[in-house]
Image (cartoon, rainbow, N blue to C red):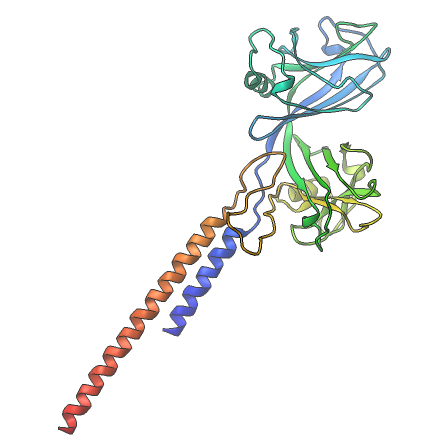
Length: 350
């Protein structure tokens, strides 16, 4: 009986642990590509080049973009995302920041402008995913656009929410942040974006580290520490061999398996003030007397965590209930046996 009860209790605890374990979030498709004069209609002869990246949130409500460029014939006059297939021209559906390189921004339905058959923000998102849009950078010498780049499938995006509570040990800070990495098709490059606010001071350093949630690990890639948002592109030349990871394919595998994290360091917190597990939804710390179930704090995606803690808890409670029932039945059998033995003794004495 005791052996059976111990087994059921062990199974219940295993179910509870499985329900609360951190699982890797699925990636989200990312888009973009090279930007040059050869894609303009008609072609523009220019030495300018660029590269663009577009990431759409899992719920299709938010678009992040990073566009780098160099070598324009003059100052950038304007920049947009237009609707149009490769080799065709179309109207503007989103304005870009029009700033110095890199241009970085966030687009929502409030930034959308209807053009042609694209009349809603949802249709614009669908056009981006279908390869039916393009970046266009305009100059005074080329008002119709000097360099252009079709927004095509580019790779896989993995998201992170940055918090002091994810640091090991936990750091108490009012700072918050979010970020993503885009692993290119083939895994040769990693584009990153990390936004933050409320740090105790300017970032002293920033990295992608190698370790699972709840553990610390060495630096895998350095990031360009600076004003928010921090952006950049990483290649094999940027990789710092750490542990078993000595090549890009190993780094990419760890990213996909929630084995890496953003870490932003400050003078007050040299070990890190803000941390975010990449591709991993980390549940918030439990309250002393919670009145409602904890919810995901994954800001970029709004996606539900892949592991549902309530499932594991329900399974554990069910198994513990079964164990209690089994214990009660066993006790009843012992009582019946004891009663029978007692009656037998009385008859023998009579």
